[in-house]
Amino acid sequence: MSDFKILSESVIRGDVKTALAETQRALDAGTSARDILDKGLIVTLDEVGERFSKGLIFVPQMLRSAKVMQECTKLLKPFFHEGEVTSKGKVLIGTVKGDLHDIGKNLVSMMMEGAGFSIIDLGVDVSPEKFVQKAQEVEPDIVAMSALLSTTMPSMSQTIEALQKAGLRGKVKIMIGGAPVTEEYARRITADSYASDAGSAVNKAKKLIGVS
Ligand code: B1M
Image 1 (cartoon, helix red, strand yellow):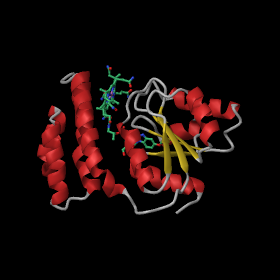
Image 2 (cartoon, protein in one colour; image 1 turned 180 degrees about the vertical axis):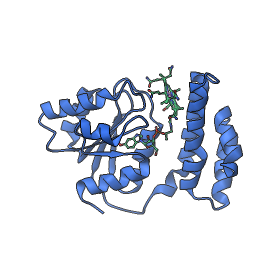
Image 3 (cartoon, protein in one colour; image 1 turned 120 degrees about the vertical axis):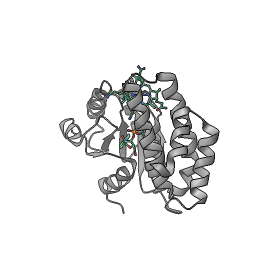
């Protein structure tokens, strides 16, 4: 964490200029994009969450930190491309209904895209009906759902039911993830796969549809 002290402090302060300069400095110094992301940015947002839980900061500060994180992630994006590849498969992704958290979902999209998947990103607050309608339209290989609130997790199960009712359940694989989501929860709601982070989401997606 100490290598990323300035980066971390600037994310917490919501200081995008310093955070971008620090991200670039770390890249120029040869630090891997993966380390900057995992050890510099994601751990800092965990710290932001801790401070929010303790009542030390409030939603506007949390939002500012999130924006800084997103700007820094843009700098890192080119480093997560595995090379020129044809589409490995189509992934329809979104953050579930009632949930506005999109940083994790965007990272999963970014890594999957970098690994050669085509991504159709529905954004945040995506209802089961919207997932179904878009799945009918684009015929994805995988429907991927993210949730960051324990209160929005049930929407994942509602979406699976809606896909089932629409006759799509046998045609798509379902992957879920997000901080409060667990492997056990995925099994319970009959999702095909759970991933704890964006890197493992890529590997699990490849496994799900049998590509390397
Ligand atoms: Co919110 N928030 N937030 N928030 N927020 C959390 C999630 C919280 C844990 C903070 C806390 O209390 N400690 C808490 C949820 C408690 C709970 O339900 N368990 C919380 C709360 C309570 C709220 C509000 C209700 C606050 C309020 O208004 N009183 C509110 C809800 C708004 C809503 O959604 N309806 C709210 C709002 C916000 C902001 C808008 C201010 C902002 C989000 C901005 C944005 O996303 N554009 C925000 C933020 C930034 C956070 C924290 C601090 C950081 C989240 C984050 O981006 N983490 C968060 C605390 C925390 O998580 N430690 C918190 C970094 C990101 C990379 O991690 O998203 O977990 P994560 O993604 C990971 C993995 O989970 C995984 O891959 C990623 C890493 O590689 N993953 C997947 C994610 N999706 C996946 C899908 C997959 C596979 C893997 O397959 C499909």
